[in-house]
Image (tube, rainbow, N blue to C red; front, side, top):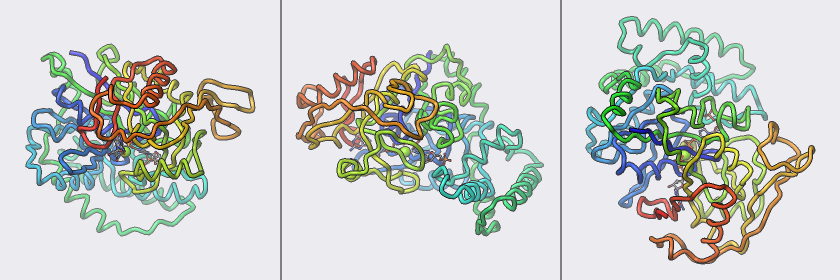
Length: 422
Ligand code: GDP
Ligand code: IMO
Ligand code: MG
């Protein structure tokens, strides 16, 4: 059986968690393939709201297996908190949650290094979530990292001490001071490692090979968004993993020819949290309205998200790099009430007009817009596409044509039920 893949096409927070939750009824396995607790995936149903950071977004469904792949970096402290928060739901984690032994661990000192690196950068800071993501992936590619499977070995604490000692020496080299109480950080860390040992730690690629042979339906869940990809994003203002489709191959051990549908999620406008270029960013009342109506605050850090018009140059780029086969448009409801909507179709750059995402979008880029008429109607109670006001339908048709990809799902609110299939 093929593996389908779901990922964000912008700078994250497109609504991946909501859609994975909605789609889980059609899948046997939901597998996260990269990122870590920098992610905040929000699910809403039956009047409750949940934010997941490490645990895949299929966890609330009674049958689906949720797998944390080798490409993910895990902070055991945050993972334990997430598990504790789910206590009221009486989820049988022993059966339903699998963790790759090859996933890397975020140590307390990785978080300190993240903080020092950001502080030392001053104004040039990335705007990291400070969860230790960058330093942990650096240790992974630098071949110094500690993997989940290591916590089962007798020499695990020695390994931990060796790496921590190295990190503490590195901390001294930063041109910034970070205050910390390592002892209390370590107490929480070792407690959570004890908890982590009680979960099913597996060779996840082998599990997925067998699941595919058995005809199971697998959905790979991405984190962040394509424009935060370490290669294709707005470098250096990116995260440290491959957030694009290729990341599902390396982050799960799924071969490229086994991937079938690639679901690309985007908001009907654009948001970004943290630093970095954002050509269609708004600094006016329109941007403020999007942020307020869309409740645009980071699910992980609570920071307010920067808002702007939809950017088709960026979306086309993400669609191509990922081989997106179906689109899902989120938060159209937030645009109700705008008289006109702007859609960025190309950029004016110092080198002339450009209709693709260039190497450097950090300076001198001016978006070129087309304007479409807005709609006033509240979309949040609608349940069928034929209820859409004609200008909203026109907006969808326009995007579908420009992006040359069908929009199969339109989301009109945060709840599971506010999801319209086309
Ligand atoms: P993720 O990181 O891609 O899973 O997205 P986040 O959970 O960080 O951010 C998406 C936010 O938008 C969450 O607060 C969701 O509850 C909310 N949301 C998702 N879809 C919709 C929608 O169609 N309309 C509105 N108004 N909110 C939505
Ligand atoms: P989800 O999965 C939005 C951003 C941070 C920062 C940059 C690097 O919820 O869509 P990092 O902590 O990775 O070193 O931060 O990436 N970022 C996200 N922005 N959604 C996310 O995840 C993000 N994960 C990281 O704000 O600009
Ligand atoms: Mg998020």
